[in-house]
Amino acid sequence: MNGPEGSAASAMIRARALGLRPRVIAIDGPAGSGKSTVGLAVAQVLDFLFFDTGAMYRAVTWAALQRGVEVADEKRVSEIAEVMEIDILPARGTNVDGRSNLVLADGVDVTDAIRRPEVDQQVSAVSAYGRVREALSRQQRRVGERYGTGRAEKPGIVMVGRDIGTVIMPHAALKVYLDAGVEERARRRRRQLLALGKAVDLAQVLADILRRDKLDSGRALSPLRVAEDAVVLDTSHMDAAAAVAQVLALVEQMAGTATGDGDGQR
Ligand code: DC
Image (cartoon, rainbow, N blue to C red; front, side, top):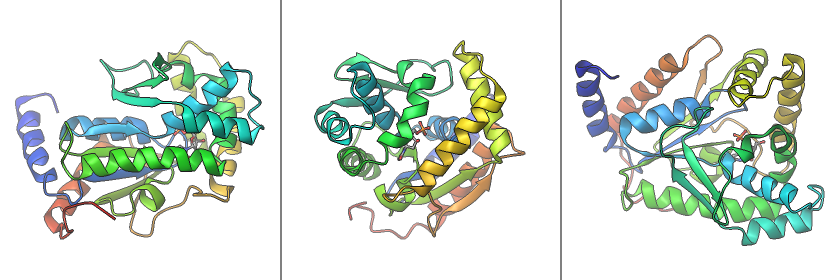
């Protein structure tokens, strides 16, 4: 996308994307399916805001661990989620694992800290709590609606998570569910951890992903599932560029058929 042709193509798709109503692209899927990599690249091409909602659950988990609060202590963890100020900002440059949101928890930069294995291990439990979900969902929806209606600094938003298309932004103009075989997802996660300087056993990463899949899909509140009107993309045998191209093709298609009311309100 960097050559002159790429730029012309990018300008064209950017212009087309303005036809999305509301200008929200929801990308959901399990850990390691490529949501962040693909979502970030799509957002960059379209000049939309990239919003990794999982970072918010991670920030709450990090804060609990930091304060010595047992993750099993639902009441205290919920209180943290309700009072903590989490800012998800466009990053300066790209972080080591390719995620491009700067994450501040009560003003502290936790961008890298929230990717540590101890957060990985506890975050699914935290994200199953009703009050935590309520507090974070409210903030996510507010951001999504503001950007989706074109009232923010960027013309639109790409939101990635587990329940964006099903619960947070059910009227998103485009919903994509990214999937990949569990072994491939484990390999990707291991590469990310290696890039962070953490050498971990593939079998360990695989076990961890399987455990998180089970928790994320099996929980009672907003479990990970495919929205009825989502397009499912299996990226097992696709590199990131191919997945990005497919999502951009869907953007073109949806922008051409947009008939929404344009205000993005529910
Ligand atoms: O995408 P991730 O691995 O950073 O997400 C961390 C956890 O947060 C994951 O276990 C599920 C949860 N999550 C969620 O429940 N809803 C979202 N919209 C995003 C993440």
